[in-house]
Image (cartoon, rainbow, N blue to C red; front, top):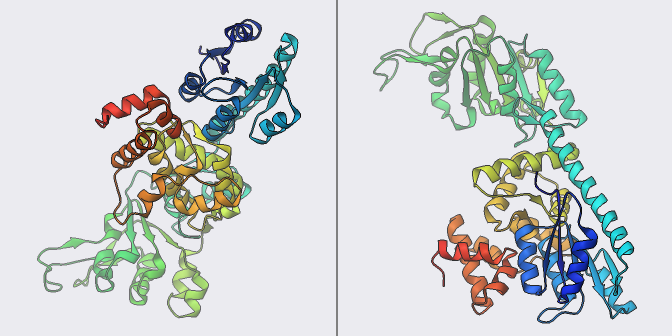
Length: 461
């Protein structure tokens, strides 16, 4: 079993590194050391440790400069600065820049062990919390939906209760809240689960074709009707028909749908012979049905027929406690889809997502995290990987997003592919570092080995 916690020590004094190795060695802790600060940064980018021990005075890069790079890479890493030249001003500056602690040299072994043990305890608590989150995610799944908020538990319970019995149902709620998943859950838990689940997007059907689309037609019913055609209601016989955005259905078609629901039979266009059907109808809309009825755009009798079972999907803003679960679920899905090793979100990225109002609900969250997973070069989603609109909110919490190629790629008139975007980022970093691979890797928050691999992939020199 691999060590659960990683620690990187960076010090230009070999005896200090040996002291760290000997005094902190224990089961479950992997210790990596570097006497060169640039090599140490490479180790951090490659191993992604939870704890970093850092000498303050080193050649090439000072401890405070390395600290800034580490915090930029992942602000969740705990950094302990060590120095033989203690000053109150330096200690305060280190803490302000993100250091967790500040120790004087020569370091007391008992003090070092005590401070590191406290950090190890915190790290293991966070790891256990992540494990619990994974377990919670598994227990919070219901028919393709994710939720543990009271609103979602209530929705899941209502679906379980009505699924075995309903003949028609109406699902309401804002756009992007998963009404289609609720419809599929009703079907899957109903006695019609072995039958077809047929979807009709009412907003995409031309008004003059609605009747023939739903009920079918016979040969010769109109110009172009060269053969009999089965409608969607017949096609869904023995199963369920999902009428998405039913608020866009014409009034004339609503009247015929009501008759079909009442009699459980359809008459094809151009025919006088009704056909018996056995179909469950689930309708959904993001519009206020009572307003539509008041405006004479929706039949009140059809509403009462459908709304014998009415379910409402809550907006994401009403169930913010589900946001971390949804983030984990979507990141895992996109990491697999894009074949990338994404561990999660940095704390500042989580803050940006938590502050957002999510007017587009789950669909918007899916879009944001899919974009972030595509843009990320490292293994952690940070603020600059998020879409430009959300990065403006990151500036509001005080950490300005870096003005790099991420923004220029989004500001361009024509979209670029993921490979083109990644190649552009690599080329830009190499150009700004004058070809210095270590510096370019630090800019991109990846290891030199990863940089060289990607340079070879895109034939960059």
